[in-house]
Length: 88
Image 1 (cartoon, rainbow, N blue to C red):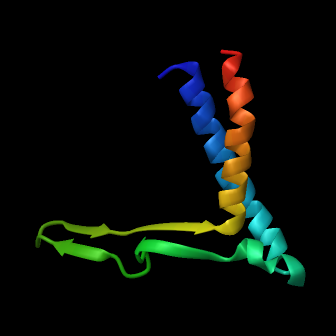
Image 2 (cartoon, helix red, strand yellow):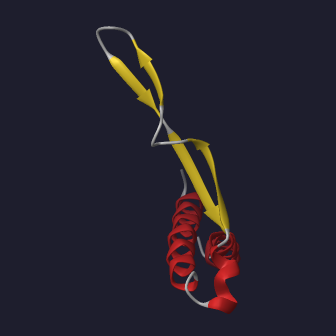
């Protein structure tokens, strides 16, 4: 992995985290509630798929949640990444 790819990964993760924080803050504001709108996809972690082999029991669950604020923040972070990547 080169420096550009690591920077892109960092920027996308920063966008995801900033978007989640922004959505939490905006959820209580009436005219900004649309930023907190989102969906969750995957196997519910509360009731995972269980594989019981009598000796060992494995539970599988994975949820991915995304909201409007995260999508916008990821987009902005990628726009910021493009000029930064040219320096490397």
